[in-house]
Length: 149
Image 1 (cartoon, one colour):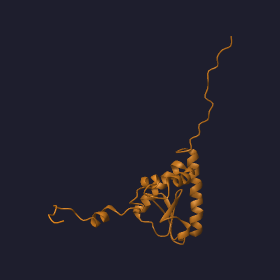
Image 2 (cartoon, one colour):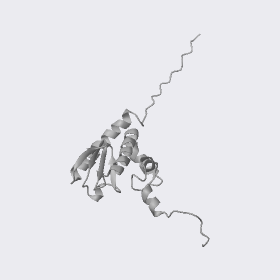
Image 3 (cartoon, one colour):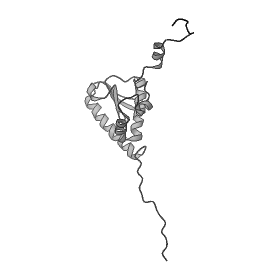
Image 4 (cartoon, one colour):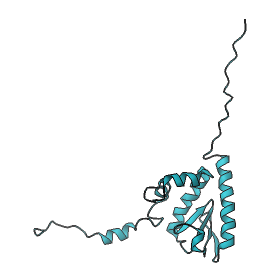
């Protein structure tokens, strides 16, 4: 009689997100962002909130108000504290997804109000919505109902 061999799972599972592979993609993107920023930046280059921030970039070298590429943030002059907080979330998304991030971002769509990555990073901080205080001032307060229409 032959003995039954135990089944072994020889399938190699490769994690593409939040893994050494995604971190490798993050570091590759950071290197690309660093070179791009170093070549085109005409303003100060600083380390802020864990990001390498390149300012003074020509408008055609980045998207919208600025672009996060790996651990680099590329912008003309949009480097306030609120927007950097938003970009730090994008840096973490780059770490989690690596080189899948640009593809996933593209699939999520160009409309920031519908893009899950922009929503996660904070639409107000990213400049896609007016600040709450500004919205409150713009909206008239409703008191008692008036008898006149």
